Amino acid sequence: MGDGAYLIFDLPLRGFYNWSRKRLEYLGFRPVMAPYRYDHHIMAYALMVNGVVITTDKDFLKFSRAVVLKVDKYEKMYVRMLKGVRQVLDNG
Picture 1 (cartoon, rainbow, N blue to C red):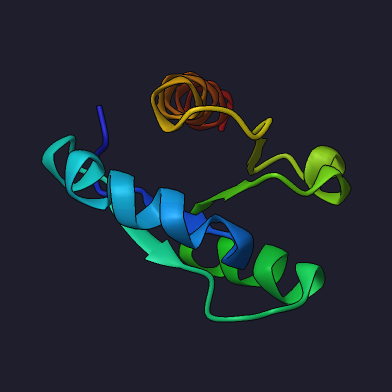
Picture 2 (cartoon, rainbow, N blue to C red):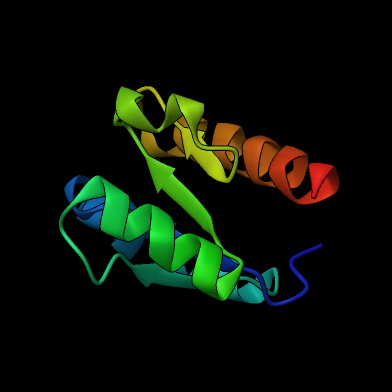
């Protein structure tokens, strides 16, 4: 499922990143924290590495390679994230 795709977590999701990192690595993904602070830099980085941005920031709704999550329990966020990532990767 993962095929080595980069999952780029926005900085406010550091706790969720730490919680889900090993789970995602077992599925074949490459989870990383965003190396940049600003949205347009994160979007450019995602395009450069062909990754998917994981965030709760509504400003990313227009970006086709982003999964915008609602803050909830980590287990629920994890399921929604995987569904969103699969949809992004299937669409291109």
